[in-house]
Image 1 (cartoon, rainbow, N blue to C red):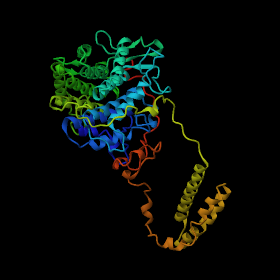
Image 2: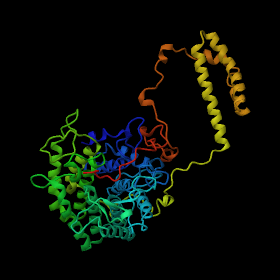
Image 3: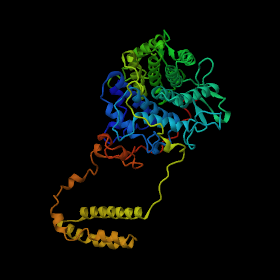
Image 4: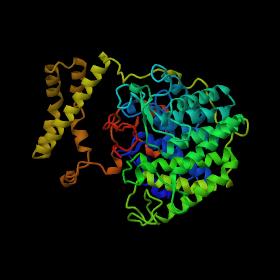
Length: 526
């Protein structure tokens, strides 16, 4: 399952970008994948994917090391950033191998995500909560969705448990109180998708997703472990009661994405939700062991059903979306399907796995309570620095060199014999200096160009081994040697050498813009 899951990830291939998966997947799901890879190592001890995991988690941190890379501002919401934060929080709790000392550390990255999100707590509308989107130009800025609250809540609860800092717990409590107070979690333990600020978040979007209730189960279990307060125990028990609607089959024990799976309407995002629900249910068992009697039968039955239908694809083992399908593959394949099947399978090993660590019980990751402060309040688009005289001069030189190369290539191809080629190359620099001057390019540049061909023309031409003309029919390097140009500079250079998968990249060269995201990850017109 893990190998087939990684077949959807090009970030560890030559020319690929660590931590990036191209369309139809969005950036957040790459962060979710990193979380699955951390889980895979935690449960199995297999280090096969550890280098890829570390490379992906570090490459996408952004300039301020808080998972807000500037080339994702047209897609990144609070929930997207939250999934990356939860991935590094798992790395912290599981003692995943730490990055080199000169790189950002797992705990500090989780704290940076939390700090930037706490600064976005918005009381202007609905008296609290996080908006779905971070940037006001993105579709959904007027929506406060439950998964953004769930990610922030559970991250705060886990930071409190790990660090012992009660400030995180207070934020977690505040987030729970707001979410339940506005009705996203009702008194029957239903957890809804969210609401619009235009309605003061009172007109709820009624869809229920596994990852929404799963995120609050995760945080509530961490809070119960941290506080030992009866109210958190009651909240976990209540949410588990509410989660029963997601288990179908003859024994009501096979996990089902109820809002879309039963009507064949799950989109790319929704196909992965059961992965996180499975992951977080296993965490609940570890932090609140008494839940095992209820949770483990769900996970066992679901894992068996998931494995039985993994018979698709050309290799005969790809997993589909539907587990409650009589063991039949439903014809679908994708990253989400593979992650979900793998996570529910791994979750059955929770009792054989070591307990998550804390700072006082074996944790080694280094934190920074002020992490992310450089990005607090940022909601502006990319701002490029003004073009300087030096930039113009450099551009002039590069333009000149490109022109020389183009004309030289034409002359070389069109010349009929070697002597004509030599004479042509000998005349070129002088003619180019005149041409450059007529274009207004500075004298220094023209002088530099005019000196290129003097004194060594014959020696340089004679020393070049002649290449048969037929070898020039294919002007492209082999595909594995082509490195796409970066969209934005500098980020990768700050991370140093992460191995061959990032060679030639100076930032995640993913397109800066993608098609607008459909409003919320819910089913339209179900």
